[in-house]
Image (cartoon, rainbow, N blue to C red):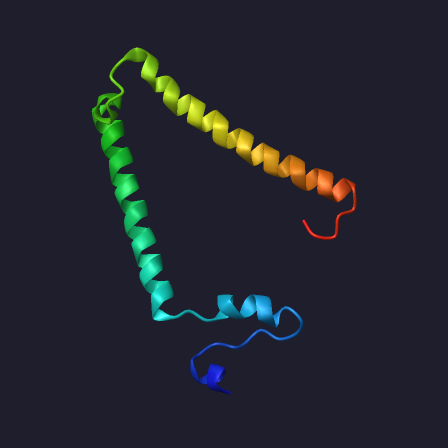
Amino acid sequence: MDRMKRGYAAPEGEDALLLDPLARASQGHYIFFGVLLVVIAVGAVAYAYQLSQGLGVTGLNRPVYWGTYLVNFVFFIGLAHSGTFISAILKLVGAEWR
């Protein structure tokens, strides 16, 4: 009954234990969310500044250094593909948990 007073309905069924933390948020959650929004805003401003001023603001003035961005992009795409690959293998072998 205490949960209803706080303004949200508690999950029911066998997934209640897993979904309960998603249904309620404490003040700490909102503070953490605010900090993440600030980090995203700072990143967006830095990216916009780089777009307006050029790659030189990153310290990558030499023509070869732009490859750093390409290498990072390819790395993270490869990381995503490896996760998909592992998930597909687990599906094929019939693993219960994946």
